[in-house]
Length: 258
Ligand SMILES: Nc1ncnc2c1ncn2[C@@H]1O[C@H](COP(=O)(O)OP(=O)(O)OP(=O)(O)O)[C@@H](O)[C@H]1O
Image (cartoon, rainbow, N blue to C red):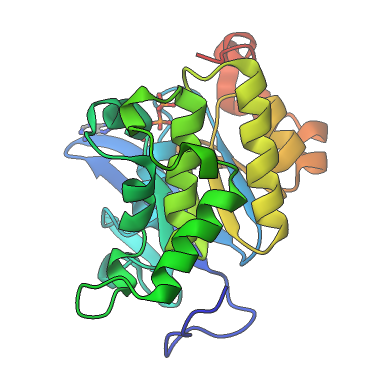
């Protein structure tokens, strides 16, 4: 995947850098002095109890919210100023549920990934090729003419991943992508994400299933308002960060596949 390097982006710099960030919704504090870097090509698993600030941290990382204090840089730019359209594929919580009512075909959704790259609002041969390649890469070519709303939850997830691939995104951000998806499809989905990460795509995943995260992620951040752990899965398993962050809810969350 080729993309222009922004002026302040340098080889070896983190793709995202969160530095001493504090954030609250009005009076409600959600994140406190959180610092974390996301390296290009890594697969970061964000874990923590319900309501611990994971989605909020992801929003801050993608420049969708501004911190009350501290800084967030994305591709070397202040995150809130970054025009993320072309370089980030974001599958928000419940995105696929919302897609059930979309009166569009699989191919049309994947084509949306090319919109920021089209010249004069027209699809070029290269745009069409990128769409077909993305459909093929996630194994949904045979579903291309189907209505998105008629697909299973797992198939819809693939459509959104294909849209991100068609846009030649460098970063894929997934917020609890397999809620409501059966166990076999979840396994297939995460194998696909694992393969895409192996090709160099940076992945950030919010996921309640600790087993999924320790199996597929290269880095884990465990938060509950503060950052309890930031390191690799092996260290994560060895430390007691999980029980510290989850407290007495730990036994519930480890089995919570929702
Ligand atoms: N738009 C909002 N306005 C006010 N409070 C919010 C808003 N979004 C989230 N919150 C609150 O901020 C806290 C952190 O929410 P967030 O969604 O970031 O947590 P989370 O770790 O992603 O939770 P979950 O795992 O349950 O999805 C929660 O207490 C939540 O109720």
